Length: 174
Ligand code: K1U
Ligand code: ZN
Image (tube, rainbow, N blue to C red; front, side, top):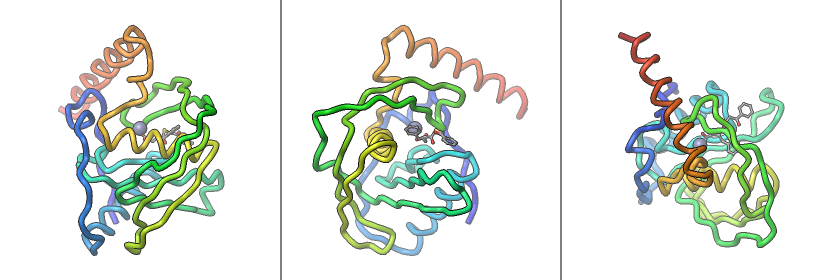
């Protein structure tokens, strides 16, 4: 297992649509293991493959509070099959938008179908933070970021700060 580098906004890859997986094999499981390691190290509660530069419909999630008791959820080709009409608001963060948070309103409950780590077709009903996290991560697979739900003014301010942040990071590396 190894940690991968997380792509930071603005980067055109974060706006691309990820493609569907055809099979679950050793290579794919190895990428999923790297994604889990990267998410735990960040630390974060979710990660989509595009955030490590891979345009595949893969997500890892772990919303458990006690990091000693890991409870990873692996979603391959996830699809939302139900969204509730009632909504909830959570303060969202994103590992590709470091240091930026915003309250985002989304359906409070959702149901998804997906393929698991063993290649089995499964369904899951989610509410609370898990439902929010699943929707945030599926947005990544479609090239959508949480800042897209904000006003143009707020979104532009965040992107401007991230451009500056990336320039400073590059100075440190060079
Ligand atoms: O997609 C991502 O970049 C991961 C993101 C997921 C997410 C967070 C909050 C609401 C919806 C989706 C994060 O994990 S940001 C970091 C974070 O939330 C966190 C970090 C450490 C401890 C607890 C939470
Ligand atoms: Zn994110």
